Image 1: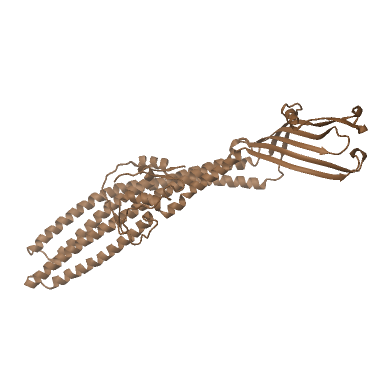
Image 2: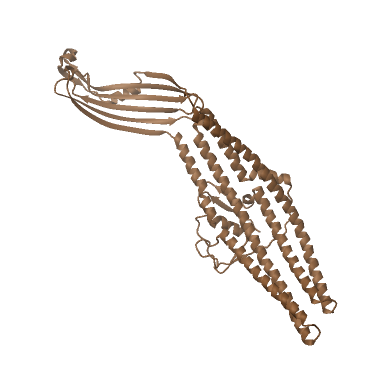
Length: 517
């Protein structure tokens, strides 16, 4: 059989491809590898599972957005009016108009803190008396940094959601590979069962023809008086029994065909009930030699379900570290540094005395001057502080810690149990291959001996040295021997398939791979 290559891209590159054309609805000839590829392309259960890695990839992208910088803008205008209630405000109605415009960039840092840079601008315009600058423009360039030092400190804690999401993506891909491997084996099992059912029907048809030939011979001999009529009744009973066996064999073929069609789904857009599948391949005996140690090593390296448990342990370790960190008190370091700038129309008073209230002129100023002064850091301001928070009781934190530890211990125990189970599966698969290989040789010899025995007994019947009873028995023995030989070949091919499944090499052997888009 020629090995074919199929590439599965996450999210339906194969599954949403169009249906195969050029096949007759009445019958479809399929090799084993064609059946496997069609199942990977058209199987409905697999089409559902293939969405999971894509969903996990979307969750990973969502988790990564936490560390992308955020850009915020703000704008607001405010106008207030109130009656004057003391002499510095002037007479009548006191008004104030404020306009605020700002922008800030906030960036999460890998150790759990955050850094922000902001620029805030405002314009203030009022009719209150004794103003030195009106309208007034102000700008403030500010840096703020906050960093946890105990609780929530560390890159593993800060990036926990990303790590977990990445592990979940790996788990979903491994789970998809597990399902693919299971699907490959299910197709192999269904295919060889159908082949066996077809070959078993052929054997029963040959046995029926031998019985009919003997019945014809007996009738002819009864007519000439050389044989008792009872022998005709015996031959007719045997023919009837073998015709009933034919009906059972035909029913087995239909049942096996339905199982294969359900897996392969060869015409996903059409009606498969009337479709006949004709398997092209026949079970062959191809000796393989693999030691148990090699098979176990390969299984430990390739089994995707083992990768799932190992990745789950990594996730549980991260959760355990995070839960242990949450038992610490909260100690935060805060740093701030800012530079203000102020500009606007400077009001000139008589004798430079604003209390006289006599305005003699203005010196123009603009918003750009305030921004320039803020950027020059003419006025430097800073704060440094620590904030300590110690919970009186941390019942929830301790409960989460205990739960995370139990989950980690459970996943470690599950891994050991799975490794033991894999050892049993691989050992049984290797042993089955060896046993079934010997069975093929034994049943082939048994079939050859049954053919020779029937041939010899038929010759004895022709010369009158035996009876029809023994010939019919030997015919039945030959039919059973042929059926068992075919069954042994099918069992041998299935044991090889089970070994592939136990090792986890089904996809690699067929160059089937998963690729991210």
